[in-house]
Length: 215
Image 1 (tube, rainbow, N blue to C red):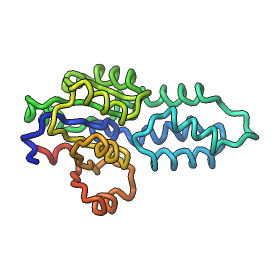
Image 2 (cartoon, rainbow, N blue to C red):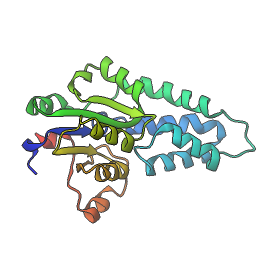
Image 3 (cartoon, rainbow, N blue to C red):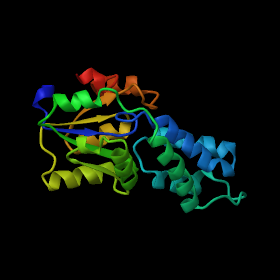
């Protein structure tokens, strides 16, 4: 498939459009720290291994499987609120892909979507405040729905036009794209997936450094 033939592009947000992976990892650590450094580090490890999954799921897993019952720490709502506050501030300041505007100009007839594990309402506010919301004419979508659920809905509603390309930086992005029958390209510059190179080689996944490589 030629890039010029693509009718829809689905972008993951963190690590693809925004350089926000590290700030979210730090926010998970800080939120979990009342349960101790060991627990916070364990949550970070789980978060990185499960990129693209919602914060709600990760904190539920944390409380059920990592947090020690001997510590009377924050409940799930407090954990999520602490995390969300830190992330919301960080997303307003983190780096945006320098080639986003040029890529939009190169693909005027291509429908753009954001499909993220981040909170949908949060993403829409951030993209609006940073004046990039209108680029994504297909819509900005996130949790509480999973990426699989979002892609399925877009297909059923005939919003997603094919051929379609998913640009992501995690194993889950690739798997969700496969289940939805989307082509996939791995974006590696900001990823926290340590074994991305061997994974892409094993699965024969094309990869690029950043969105600039598509120009």
